[in-house]
Length: 376
Ligand code: XIL
Image (cartoon, rainbow, N blue to C red):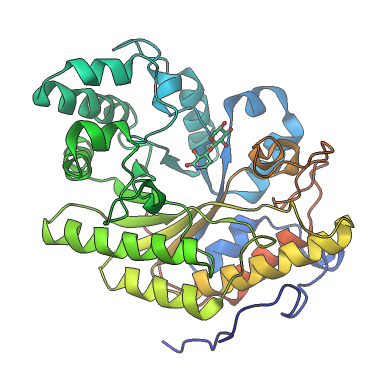
């Protein structure tokens, strides 16, 4: 395949060509982003909450128009689904999966094994258990959730956020994780084998953040990821795909297309596919003028997505939310604006209008080389 040439140097914000303005795009087409994704054999999706589907028809219409894939923003995290040991509440996830099925959308499951958003009872229980008991405390959730949604959730984030070089380990693994402490790195092997067994048809993802920017922080995290993959592949751990979360923060760290393209090629070298699973752009620190900020957000998004979608192993792009009305960025301490204004990091604004970021995503999909027939 002909590879496009990417900018070799660090990308200056606003330096790349402006994306097509949203009004021009909208006048020629009201197609959603999923239609743009489909042309090259990809998917576009978003993280959603069941409450939004129940209470916000405008938002729900926008999801149906823009997406052909959905993921739960929190309703498959174990802190929500298993408030008491073995007592499950899948009501929120059930609604999201029913919505996906009604609309012919593909669904992801997020996330089976994570250090965060766990029920309070879990960590003390792990401390009291023997090795077999500790394994069971992890695998019981994999079995229960994957069994419940077998055939309906096509891909799972099996292990989320296993890396944290700042924890001080030479291998860059996250030490401050109840799973690492309970089982050592073997927790990853056990989780993937169990997941493969629970639903052999599902695509199994290892997902992480901080893999995108041209910064010492992300460079350490990319290195840790590649080294982890060396070990997992040597042990025949059944990983299918890497989820690059894609939480960009362009007003704090730079982005370099060549650096990111090289990393994706390295990942592809392991025989893995990948997706951007939680894309958004943290805008705090950007220009105070919202229009100017929107242009810069769109510009860095286009630079990032052009590289992502140039790689034939890239299967889908999911945003972490769809409209600024509900972005987690507006509430997260590190990213929220002190004056309470909404973050502008998602393709639709707080009134469900398409922004330059929408155009950036659409035009990146339009420019993407086709990867042939999509899997069912
Ligand atoms: C976030 C949700 O968006 C918030 O609503 C919640 O309070 C915290 O978690 N990486 C992940 C996601 O893998 O699960 C996180 O979602 C965002 C960062």
